[in-house]
Image (cartoon, rainbow, N blue to C red):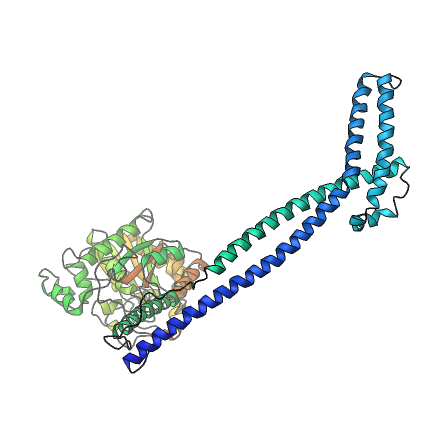
Length: 520
């Protein structure tokens, strides 16, 4: 009860409770009295029906007695027939007794059918069964009489049970009516409040907090439900039923990378211009990222006999997923274990391997020159003093017609020639959905690895890329999850280390306009 004056609020609250209890007592007493009256009426009706059924059954006493005697005589004759023939004195005596009983039965059945107290039951049969001197009529009426007796017995029994039940309920209701009380009681009278009852600030804050938490969880669930980006290793393995060769965690901040590079003392001078991320991965001692690429190297080596699977193609569905970064580190990882390795840039439209090494595209001949046969292999292969077992072929000059240079027979001869010199070849190619160039190269690769960037690559794009590889007559050997934040998905996955700065290459508005990079 709310009122500006506390005393008035107290008075009104107590009066309301008092009148409510009186009202409930009146309603309950009235309801009990109405129930008693209804039960009394029902008991009278059931009693009349019970008496009627008992009277009808009593009117059949003589015919039913005759029926019992006739059954007894029929049973006696049936037993005597087993021992005696029809002319035997006992059989003749039994037959005379049967004839007398049958005649009496005929008379009583005719009286039964004309019983005025049960006229409704016999009316359907009265016009059909008129000759009570006929044995056939007698035999038709006997089952009807027995059936009527069974019906009346059941009816009397059920009516007796119902009548007793009604009498019990009447007695209970009468007692309840005499002791009628409201089912509610006032536990305590209203008292003057020590403080206003509203607004309840504590309740408002609690409800607002609960609502805010629930709304936040609901929004998070909705965002997760409609998020179509690849987020962790488990999603790739579940959606594509293929293994993840390695998960490459995100790097730390740029400052951390630069500090790690500054501590390197034995870095070859020829690598002064190489990207810091590459230096930190391969020359900063036992780093987590070096271990991740060793896992990737081992996964690729386990795909088959290394002598027969020399060519590993690295691609992605869309640009800016870090395939060049992965290809470069994988090639350096192979070289670090003494494998004579070649990294070759086959992304002829938007080459970026030369940018990783701090070179200008126009300063070196490369893949374009090999394909148009203006330079030999020895003229385009570039090595770095101090980096053993590692060679690289940059893309070379821009080609006006990159697609025409990738002629299958020419590609096959070139790769076969390179396989004679190198133990392993890592190919960096264009994104599959951007241009068709990679689909021409795929049939000549022994291992095909697709890079997906965590929380960026759409599932649909990766599925389309897999479909394109399969249409080229091949199957992806596995996936590489790049820029993976282990802390973010610690509960969902067990791959990857660290978190922070990720690495990719280039910037694309859409893969439909994939073309040359203006920066060499």
